[in-house]
Length: 379
Length: 76
Image 1: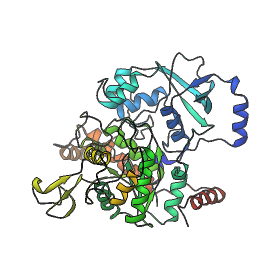
Image 2: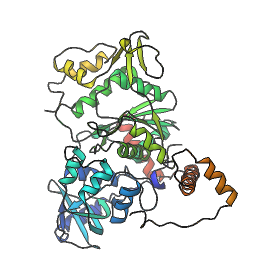
Image 3: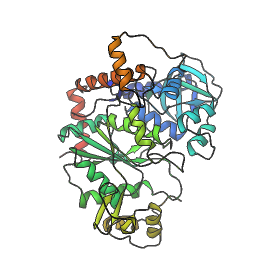
Image 4: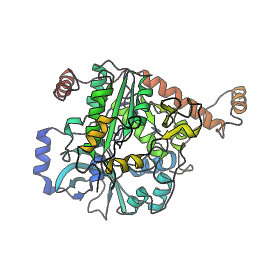
């Protein structure tokens, strides 16, 4: 049986076509708030149950509870505050407002709470630092001075060029059940696959019924692989190297916070809502720079006996020339002189220079796909 | 919600059990018997909840979902 949704119920905050038409037709009667893409993506994730049990943006009580205790005010584990910020609002608690993104009304919100907050306190609690160089802290400092909490109803999706691979929790749950998968392990990625990824995924799959590869599509920085490259690379890897009845691929739109350990828990909760029973937690998962220790994202799981999804801590893979295969530090007895670590930067450099990485680091089919793109990287 | 603002209540347990737990948590990450008891109770409640039945979609909705999954090639 797939995982129960987090908090016990799968949230769905979408509206019928008639209701949408009516609300959009009356849009000038509502106070309007413009939201950025990241907030719009959060909104979609709330509406489709990816963030169950949230049915809206956090109220003050939940916000403080998440910051101080990493739990919602009803004691449900929750580590990343999902927030709607606004400048001095022209509305009051009890009002309904419309949220606009890129000129389109994307949601109606029932305002339960309007509150002020301390940005430095938020940054320190969530990111463990108030260093303005940290991308998450930077984002916090760019936010407006008020937070608005309350339930939302999704009116319009933001345009999605990867609809073919976009599955909602309600769909993945049916899919896993139809495939007869009682246990499913999720792997989150923002990269094209190399043999280290493949090793970790297949090691995890050995112990469960199904593998759910779940690339995160969203804001990218220069030098990152473009979303379509990641998807095409996985398509070809699936075609040639993965068992069709035991692995599947679907994307999720999500804006990384780079909150390290706290975000690792959040990523696990998202996959629990998709129906997964296990989640692969990487070394320095959701980290950036050197703000977090390499295994902090593993340790934090000890604090949540009631998370409802099992973390899988699989050590970083590397190639051992003596073993003649991908291994990790736990299973390989040989010294470092025999090891070849997989460096994403090195692979990117090779690809940029048109050099095919050795087969033990990257499947030739994957390299071929990447090379077929004129510009595989974000500029 | 600071610790002062967080709501707590009191539960009675036998003194012998309290002493046993106190001994057990020495040298662990738990700083108090209350912390340990909270941890264990959360674990127990979560495992009971896991056994509860998964929510059921309506037949109609499930069929619609399957149709989309078939159209996308996820199901045969």
